[in-house]
Length: 331
Image 1: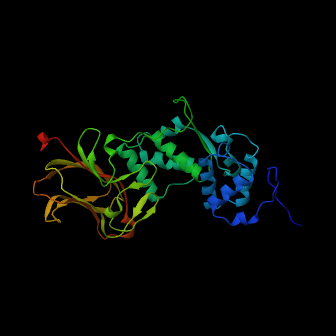
Image 2: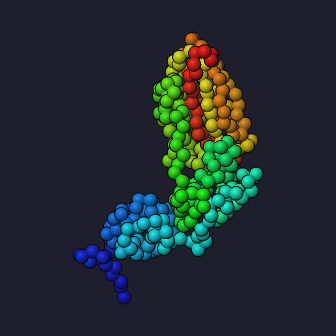
Image 3: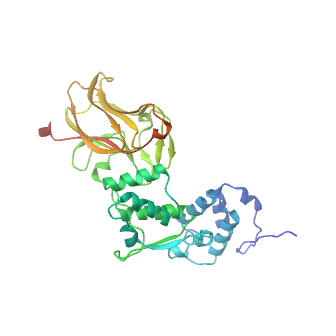
């Protein structure tokens, strides 16, 4: 006996079983089209989550059923009305954010382990744990912002986590913090920042989770593992070979890497015949260094190199490398 699926449209045409062989994203779009589910009923964010659930091993029949129920469910009002409810794991949960934030108030590492176990149902990978712990330590994220990040990650993995706060007006996720004015420059260009200072950005992270860096400044092929670059020995970044205005410049660096990992950083000119600054960074680092650019320093460049080390040390996350010219009186 054969079963023919028919759509809810007036034409009642049969479902083409070949759609089950489409790539995940195309499959989701094909099923939505079959049931006449528009973006008002299934927004792009939920469609992406369904695609992600397929990549995590969720059955296509589960996704098919979730979308079919959406076709007559009406407009999605909140995250709890989402068709993703039909394919969530049994361990989904609801938490009071204020209680989670106050866990182990003097121990960020214990807080992070507890939060991941509660929200993700697992511990983070070593690299994810390193990045989160360092972000908390240097104050680039609060505990509340980190919890919001983990909830988004859980949703992308097919877990519906409710997070409410008695200290907020709304239980919705916090908006992403605004980027500082120092991060507005486009990488690879010598420009003027919001304070009217000359600025050059070699590389910086992007709010969407990637990096902004010119291709010709990237000196080797990299792969991404848990938000880190997996690299080999040798130069990682080098540029821009510009003639900079003589004076005092501030080199700002934000780098996360394993505790015993090393990176070599320098600022050179004239094909490295003149060295304005050079150091070796061990472990993660966030800070600024004063660099003096002399009138005879032509073709200046910032270089970042990775010494040959054990495999577990060959990971790095670069959040910012930039030069900003300070006032003439500071030189």
